[in-house]
Image 1: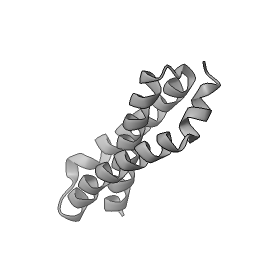
Image 2: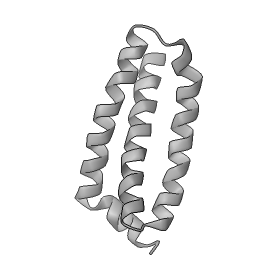
Image 3: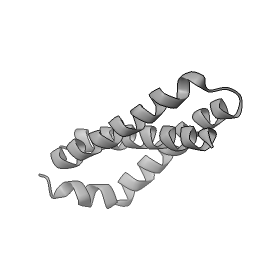
Length: 89
């Protein structure tokens, strides 16, 4: 179970960081502000679970990042994030 939580939190963290980069670079203040909460929440889960990780849990941790960044790129380029952030400018 903690392997899945590590995968999900790493996915969420890298997704949020990738999205944050796009939001900040394109001046979407509200989107960047709200996205920061997601970054913090994912970090809290990682800080709680990662220190005791071993074996399959480490694999889950490592797998979440690549999928997270590709998903963030797709979501931003698809226009969903740009439409959501446009309301803040």
